[in-house]
Length: 229
Image (cartoon, rainbow, N blue to C red; front, top):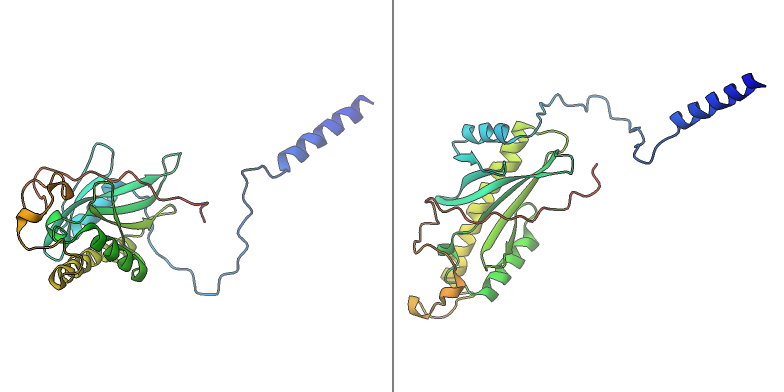
């Protein structure tokens, strides 16, 4: 009798141990075509790794107090101070590299808010990767996401990360110049006396895009990480 009790208890423990838990995921059962596996180098994403990759592109960056990278991007020849923000899961795993930078005030100062909203809407309708939005202060922000939860490929970062982003910044600058030249969204009048100072807070009084010690405020809006792959 005692032996039967021990046998039953042992079987119960075994079944509980083998039962799938709520956090378990089914094994991937796909069949990859022959020869489709790539020998691509993947690295754990980090500020140090990304900074090294930026150095190869001769792009200046430094790690800020939050562990993100302050970066001087370029839209054509115009410097744009911004960040590469490392979006993290609750356990600290970096799942996304977020490229973000405001467009210099000098590039939008002759376009009113309605004109900027039309510009943003048209851009986001036609573009896939880099997106635009107006923040609460009326600044035109640029943003691009590069997911890296399961590793960062250096070539992927260069081609579809930094180079794609800076190429898009250049096209944003060119398109804004066309909008100003066509008078679309003009606030009216070419004189500076008609412009509202509240439209451009903390511009620093320069037209060089803010390349001094002043760093624009970093966006804290993190994209939805979704449910993973």
